[in-house]
Amino acid sequence: MEQYEPDRLSAAQRAAMRRSFKNGRASLTRRSLLRASAGGALAAGGLGTLSACGIPAAGQSKGGVSAEDHSAKEKTVNFSNWTEYMDVDDSGKHHPTLDQFAERTGIKVKYSEDINDNNEFFGKIKPQLAAGQDTGRDLIVLTDWLAARLIRLGWVQKLDPSNLPHAYAHLSAQFRSPDWDPGRAYSYVWQGISTVIAYNKKALDGVEVKSISDLLDNPRLKGRVGFLSEMRDSIGMTLLDMGKDPADFTADDYDAAIARLQKAVDKGQIRRFTGNDYTSDLTSGDFAACVAWAGDVVQLKADSPDIDFLIPDSGYVTSTDNLLIPNKARHKTNAERLIDFYYEPKAAAELAAYINYVCPVDGVKTELAKIDEDAANNPLIIPDKAMAAKSHAFRSLSSKEETEFEAKFAKLTGA
Image (cartoon, rainbow, N blue to C red; front, side, top):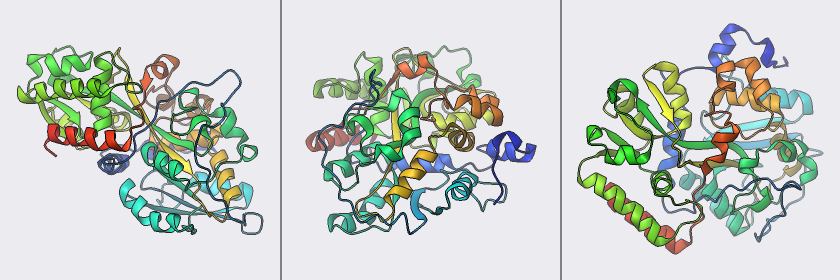
């Protein structure tokens, strides 16, 4: 098997890794599917900072149920992921980083793109997990709110730190200790997802946009503003603009944010709430500005000089997709070795260069620059300290809050 060296890539390979939205990079589809499935589920927790002593001890979570580990005898790992969430070579048939892992370790990865929707996938694995049975999967990627649910239910296994030296050393401080998995005892980040303000310079026609308030209040933008149909992003960004922390807000704060958005809806300021189909509105100029996902903006900027983004002074919302090992998985150690592999800066850089989401691995910038200097210097992929300091996550919700908050947001959006 040919070794995959990022600094030896041909021009064609480099171009393929930077394939654009027009050429079919389908992270956009992955994002809309992910966000459309978030209703009725547990929310993401806040992102803490790294303590002076490293990752803090895990909090009060139910322990998962282990099984006999067959990793030593069965050199395989079954990995379920979302579509278009892995690097692919020019032929479209091979995943270079997975091939590199197999060559180095002798562990064959059975890679399946069988996660199309969080709730759908949960329904698929729930009967087996609830019955204490093997799902047939050793490693899965779930969005933070669903990862939190599985941890709470005790349906994923506690990770062995001795198998995760690179993950322990290189996980970005921004993602070290969410309130739903303190100390990352059960999960590690696959990719981060940032919510920002995107705009079309031509459509703005000189209008200055610096904040959510500008989107909601400037009459020159009436009918040309978009917000997201994902509650945590739109409400989270609005709360920040109101001086409230999405990681620590009250029901009254939430109602105030709903009222603020409702006022903008009633006066026709907000054109509509969207999934990732805002990308067409933004590029066409139907939206002059909108709340957007950073992974999309990276691709849109590559295709249009009119598209750009900004981080409000008030901050922005961050969430994560996460690697977890289900109960009764047959190859836990092999799965942990694969997690750890993606926390090596070189492998992390190869992945980041292709999929363009927020890389959770410290020390990746130098390796990424060998592949794509623009990506390495893009704060939407490698947040600098100033940007990371502005990130906030939506706090975990109780079941009662979840039901009430989603119902209010659905009424606002007309869903």
